[in-house]
Every structure is written in structure tokens, then in C-alpha cells.
Length: 132
Length: 132
Image 1 (cartoon, one colour):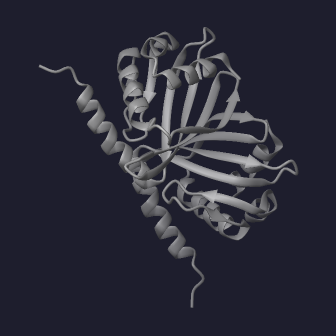
Image 2 (cartoon, rainbow over the protein chains, first blue to last red):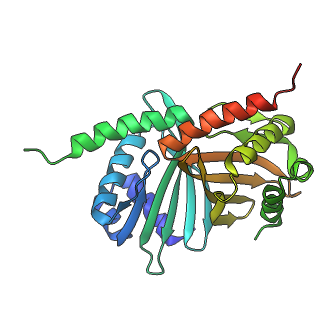
Image 3 (tube, one colour):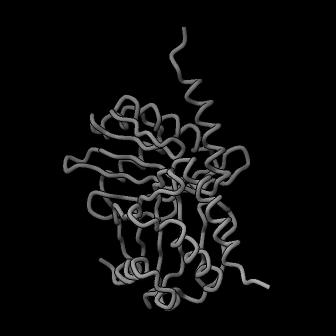
């Protein structure tokens, strides 16, 4: 398995924000399953990935299924549950030769799952906003 | 590139129903981007893939982007447009050692694209129903 993907798995297991920061390139682009417009840069990508980890990694539900790794690209299929709705999705990850992630794309199915993530991510990003 | 994926590309280019029939295993399972329940068997999978090819392959719009191939699995990222809405998606394909597809999963993003496919596939499957 690629060392980038090994590191990613450790970050997900430990919800490791510092490890995530080191694994992302400054110019990383995040593509949400809900919204068309890409999010550019490490700061906003970290925010989205942290929110996604908290939203999707429901204890006892989240697990990775297939891993398809080819050169500097990987697709990790996952399954989880939000609000009783089964989510099947992928993390599509691309990295540079320095081993830093430069592109992170998430897709989910079926339609109900996209709607559930839309609602849950909205709540999570709202809660993570700096207060005051 | 895998010979299964080469064959798949030729089928898509030529909208080749006979080639598709030969490439699918009898027990193939299709997973739609819209509906949770898997569709089991060659007959229903052929129907869905033919409808998807007609729906998604809008001339001048459809193109494959990344290909991630690993063992008996491949993920083909594509981009297209339906009713003016940009669709970004993947075909996630698994085959057996005989070179026949046993699992075909489609996911698309963003949310607008899932809704557009839901509407377009519904119209297409209705139109393809045997009449009378």
C-alpha cells in the first residue's frame, strides 16, 4: 500500500489534525460530494476533512471497503451511516512526488446519502465556526 | 491498461450492446448512483448501463478523466453534462479472472448532478420499456 494512504488511515483512526496538516500540500484542492465549486488551499481543505471525519466516522459504522491504488492516485471505498441512512462513498486522493496530498475528492451514493451528508455537514461546519 | 477496461472503452465509444453482453458476467451486480438497492444479473445490468450510456454520453460533453487500475478493480472518473448541469462521476468496476465484469458501481457529484441523473435515468428507463 502507498505510504500516503497508510498515513491517511492513521489520521482517520486517530482523528489526528496535526498529521492531517502535514499530509496536505499547501495548494491542495477539496471537492465535496454536495457542492460543485472546488475548495482551494490547505486551510479550507483541513476544515472540510475534519468536519467530514467527525460527520462520517460514526463509531461502529464507518469502515473502508475496496482500495484501488495506482501510481499517485488512490480510491478508497467506504461505508457508514448517518441518521439511520446507509452511506456508500469514495475518497479519491491524488498526491505529489513529495508524498503530499494535492487533490481530495469525495463522492457518495445513493441520493438519500448525498442529502444526509448535505444536512450533516452543514450542521458540523456551522458548529465549527469561530464564535464571537 | 487492463484488457477489460480497454473493452469497456470500445463499448462506450461504439454504444456496442453485443460487446457489453459479452463483457458482463451472468451474476453481475449494478449499483446505481441514485438508488440503494443493488440490481442483480446480466439482464437488468445491461438495461441500466445502456440507459446510462445514452443518458450520460452527450456528444461533445462526455469524457473520461483519471483512471485508477489495481488488480481486478478499476475506477474511471468521468465528466459530462445533462440539461446544462455539470456531472462529475466514477465508474467503479470489478471483474473476475475470466475477464468478465462482476460488479459495476456508479457515483456522481455534486448533489445537483445526482438529481439531474435521477430525472434523466427515469425518463430513459421509461422510454426503453417494452411497449404494448
